[in-house]
Length: 247
Length: 261
Image 1: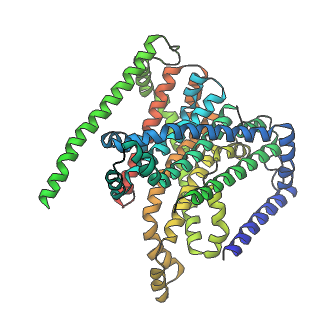
Image 2: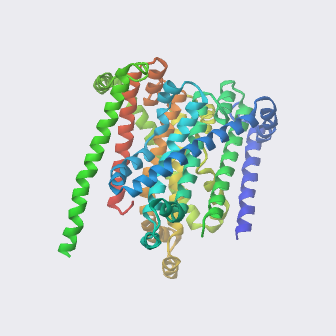
Image 3: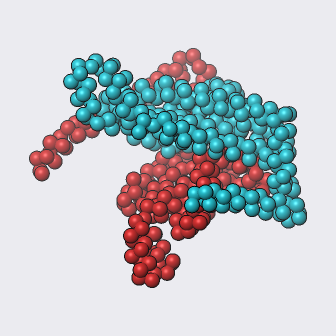
């Protein structure tokens, strides 16, 4: 079933690409609106060679990882605090949930004023959206630790720090991983968006640049490249999370 | 029962008071810190205008009829996008849930594309739909499609096969199967996803306006940024965030009435 399914999925892709190719080649769709897929794919090597697509990829991923690492460094202690001090958690949890649902990306002009048109702004925008799920999930994970484990720490006369590092955090790890995955995804989406909107940095900038030059085939290639790459990346994180998850 | 309810209620009530106090203190502290930095002269006042300046900009904005015209444009673009993307997502999710073949062929694509940064589709949408409301609606629709499609399909898959066999054994048609079994069981996930879809659709429309537009709230924000009218920009951001959070809270309350979380 799954093998038949994946053959079907790939078959669908081939059919859609062939259909688009036919539409464009026969002139039913103007090449200025959508060039033939073969030309779109053929434009990718030029993007790598002349437009620094490889460097842009490296830059976007580096910014994403840096932003997420900062989010972990700050978010895990913050989530731990909110779990340990119940009242603080109760006070701030709804705010965090609200922030998670808010259009935070729109704050980017504000960060531009403070950090300038630089990679710092891009990274900070990634950090701000990544830290929220990390805090929420860390708190959720620690609160969800079974009471029997707390009792074990007590009966072993563990210090609060020992019980945190040896028992509570490991037990909360699967949920913290969920926060990490969400953080990575949100950071990357927002980083690409800011790059695209401001026209600086990595992958988003390449797409915006190709549009500004009205180089339609290269623009399509850049879009396809970003979508395929990010989808593969997110798939990889999902697999990684399942693999890292201690049962 | 009554005493248990009382004992459970008493601490939560005192907890409620401290929670409110913590929130009040935090808000007051943040505002005071902002005002202190703003008036200390450490930061250029253009970057951090005083609370007074932001407040009066907010009042001016709320009294301005032009603001509501732009708000209407953004609401129209996001609303049309949600309507289109949401209904296509619903139909797609139902189709995937009914047909195993469709699910096997399409589900990997939907799931792979769902978290991708959709903003990069914007230049394509501008090439295809021009620069008026078209690409904004399309951006909102693409954003709204995925959460609804994924949630609908998830709800369809969660239906107990026994129910399906029961209805089948009564010789029900596909339409009856959808109406009697599937639709009632996807109401909760779909309502939940609608909240998410509205949020991302609003972001999609606003960002499309920021990139290229001459109307809408996103356009106003970026205009104020370009002209360095920071107090006005803060005021706009406050309005947009308040609106987004209000819509989110309203949809959450609406969903809760039907059992969604």
